Image 1 (cartoon, rainbow, N blue to C red):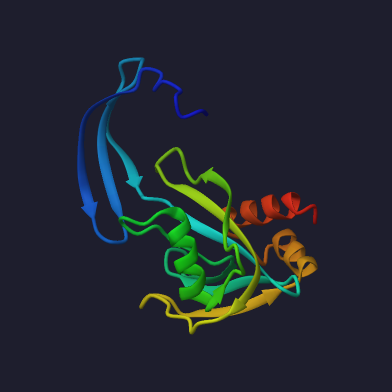
Image 2 (cartoon, rainbow, N blue to C red):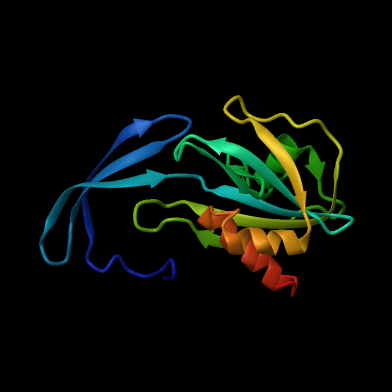
Length: 188
């Protein structure tokens, strides 16, 4: 839906933050629907969004990260990504996350915005900002967050295609980002 689409009669009667931490901001709304039905506990996760990076090396391999995700209690393989910090633009976040998680930096002119996707419109205002870069090479030592233990992997385009098709990459936002970029680069 376009951002200017009306709320279709949803009226927010009251809002309060029930969780405010560096990792989660959760708002509880009391909402009146067009039918008159009142919802006392409609929760919305607020976020500055996050950036996902599709970085290709000079030999056309894609930079991936393998790491544990506590929410599901398992490891995942995905593109480098991270939450946008306060005062940071999506591009600044993408540049920072690529270097912090992998040590890689995209060649000049650097990363470029490829697309923005809505992550979970039912219960969140978060947006995924996808950035692409080529000629990526390791220039710095990774400096992951204290909650991250990351293994960097490089995949060929054929391997990447297989990973999204066979479920090796199974995080929905990253599947969308990979397919979007493979289509954009005419590599599907």
